[in-house]
Image 1 (cartoon, rainbow, N blue to C red):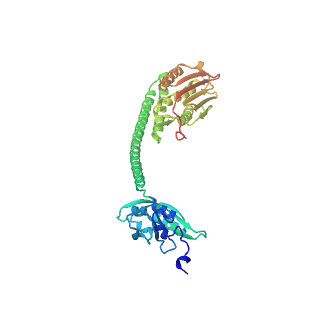
Image 2 (cartoon, rainbow, N blue to C red):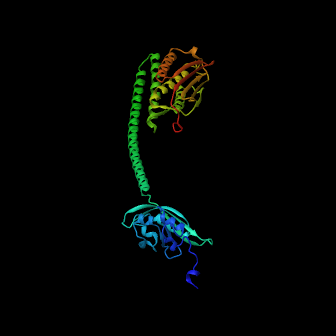
Image 3 (spheres, one colour):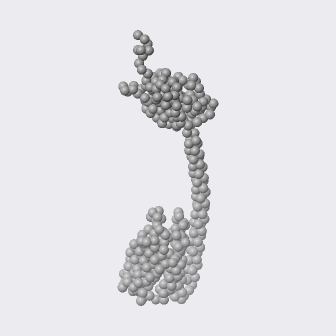
Length: 379
């Protein structure tokens, strides 16, 4: 029997004479592959080392090789010294398992120049599921990859610059914080020295009214010293925890008064104020609590209660100090001086100050603008 009559019809994917006919003749699919500007080739995994069995002219133009130089060879001749070994291993695994794969590879032309190859490989099987060929397309994406590399390099340079600048700012902040801590420490020590001098002077004075005035001044200086002690101990010297200060102040003043029958009721939200407001706020709180202890309870043996509440419902710090004592009508001249001092400090803080008769006692409300509280401001 004639050999040509017994041979099976050629498969459109196989390297047959139909793949070499002129454009538009014979197998139209093969003609389309040859004519397209997309670089394409076909390999045969049934042959040893999965060689190339077809390559179109676009592939030859992309790589610089002649057809006779590549036919029957494995595509690995396109790889070079800088081709990513992980990408190569991913490609080998896909081919071994008969899977399709899309990967960017750094490949090399015949003249040694490199290009980025957006490679797509797809397996072709017959109706029985038998793997016949691998169809591969290549696209030169060197411009895109170079742009990506430039973007990555720019990003790395930017991140490194930000990192260096952040380190510089952190070092400057640490230096500034150390200096501020040292300033607060020295101010606290100087205030303690002033307190000692006033105390020594008061012991030589026989006039009781003068001694009382000096004692009141000592209390104010102690309040200021407490502010600077807290700032010195704080990690963040830019803000001051006024709630913690008030809690300690009430405890210290009640203990120093020697009147255990007077109790306190505290309702203090965690609130901080900027460091530049710490001193006037601390003096106001100290003045209100001291005045209540000294002037609200005429009978030293009678029980009493002092309440301190701090809240910030709408961007304003609200400080409320109340007592159940004699009320404002029973206040003497010293209390009036305290009122004038509180009003003056209130103007400094742009605060509204209101005194109310509570029947019994007095209720003072200070409302001042204060910035929003963040989660890390106070704990």
